[in-house]
Length: 263
Image (cartoon, rainbow, N blue to C red; front, side, top):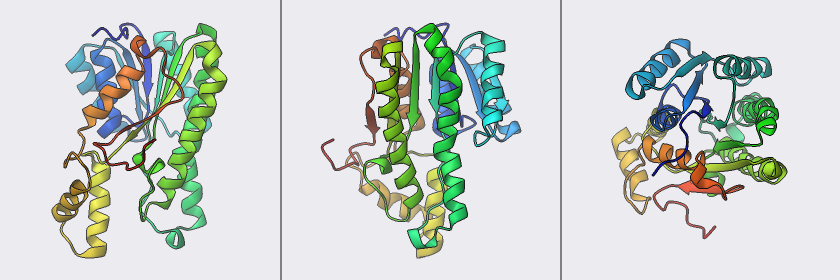
């Protein structure tokens, strides 16, 4: 299936590893030019080199702190200088620490708001004017299954990922007339360093081994396994494509059946 992404330009945030890197790779394989960013310069240079070498697509690596509006604006300006257009924005951010409500300080809340929510606001504010001029665009926000089914000890993610879904639906309604489609993807348990870190933290609390914890989590999933990052990435590539022209305002779960609700 031709996704119609050849020649498109995509910004993928948080793309030095895991789901973000897999998304950049999937889009590049379809012929898109990709801007990859992370706060860690060495990691993003390495990841961009790997994506460019494997796909032959043009890749622009940038070290960006998405919590700072000026950094985001610089990223968008650099993209326009390099490629002359922005067609696709994928907002992907790392997850906050695992805590209960009473363990979560005010500073932790502020940090999480800036990391998970304001970073998405800054990126959307910066790219939307350019998409409106072209009357075409795709914004895909990576949330979490926790936005639909809150998890214990994940109060920050439960709260802020749900906010991402509210922002997604609002922007979808406001931008539809300009040909800009806005959707969210809610990954379930996925084999990434983030999940390994959560399992390590749980191991420290319970005394169980990391393997035991991962096996327990997997049993909660109807498919009885974790997702691969590329399985999330392929859904994002479809939403970014010409084949998804009538999908906007959706929050699509890619979770192996983990979420129990009907909607």
